[in-house]
Image 1 (cartoon, rainbow, N blue to C red):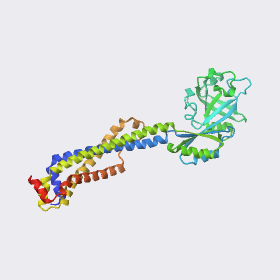
Image 2 (image 1 turned 60 degrees about the horizontal axis):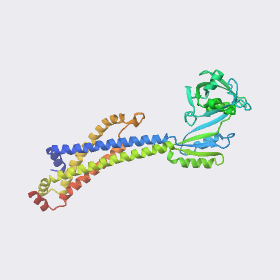
Image 3 (image 1 turned 135 degrees about the horizontal axis):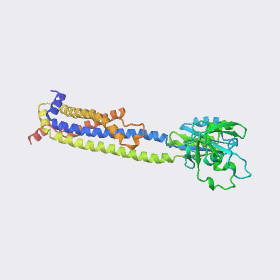
Image 4 (image 1 turned 30 degrees about the vertical axis):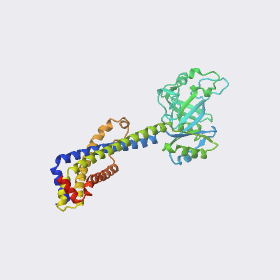
Amino acid sequence: MNCFVRASKYLYRKKQKAILLLLLFLVINVMVSGTLAIRISFLRLAEELQKNSEGKVMLESLDRQSGFEEHNLQEIIAIDNINWINRISETRCLPSQLFPVAGNEESEDLFDVHGYDELEKDSPFAEHIYRIVEGNLPQSRDEIVINKYLAEKNGIQMGEKILLQSVEGQTVEAAVTGFFLVGGEERQTDNVATVNRIENQLYATTDFVYMLSGEKDFINAVVYVNNPEQIEDTADILAEMYEGRAVISAKDNTFQKLNMTIGQTERITFLILLLTILVGCAVAGLLLAMWTRGRKKEIAVLISLGVPKGNIFLQMLSEELFLYGLAFIGAQVITVLLLPVVGGRMEYLQENSFMLQLSPSGMIVSLCAGLAGVMILTGISVFPYMKKQVKEVLSEMEG
């Protein structure tokens, strides 16, 4: 009778012990697989959050008259680690259908028009200095938002179209999509120049400013990076490129806070995984040692019948590997069924596209590590009886 047949007959004969060890392997594998799925999902989410953590380098032109041109934009985009660029442009326009709130009598009647690729970011609206009290921020090149006091003075209604005329005489039509307030409009003194009054600040897209001014240039740029960990290197490259032309500053406060949270969570999940493996190995090792101790007579009988010790070890190893393999398959099925339930209760996954799921590579690594662990634990539990001489084992059996 070969070792594999003996292993199957032994497991059938010792059903209770086999089921106990099978359940232990099952629980260990479910905990390890679940922890790995949570850890891998969190690391994927952390990578995506880092990319969108608003790590950015700000370029402020020293010469607001010339600023940056279109070819400068292409130079910046060509730099590694650049995600996207929010251009900030400015121009001035003359009263046409829209008349400014008067300031200093000696100042000219002008409006300041501010353009952003995305007004939701890096503008006074993003910093909550200005707030939209009616309507929405511009989304297309022919939309604009104006101050509510300016709208009341000119009788402008939401959605109404107005004409703006550049200093060079270029006329552009824009639809008013929103009104904003700052809260400090009434506290301004009469010494403020007309163009500098809050009411006379108009906000639109960069493309609108381009149409009005007739020039594709911008005075500032906010460069968002893919990897905030390399933000200093990116800032150094930009500082070298535009030395003497721009003030360079980096901002990654969100990433620093996020990185701290990511590091803490990563350490916690690793600690849980490590404790699960250590406790599982300790319990399984003790159980196998007790199981092997109770099989001294069986080992002695097999040795007396001339069965090689290596064959006996192979039998016992086959038993453990079979139970572990069965438990591993069952654990994967249970984990797949439980992960959607666990994921639904985790806040950081509820509003993200990342779902808890088993990783094929993680499963393979877990299976190989588990099988190796079972082989080592089986070897440790059987070793005391394998190193003894036949007479010693037989004498222990008689004792």
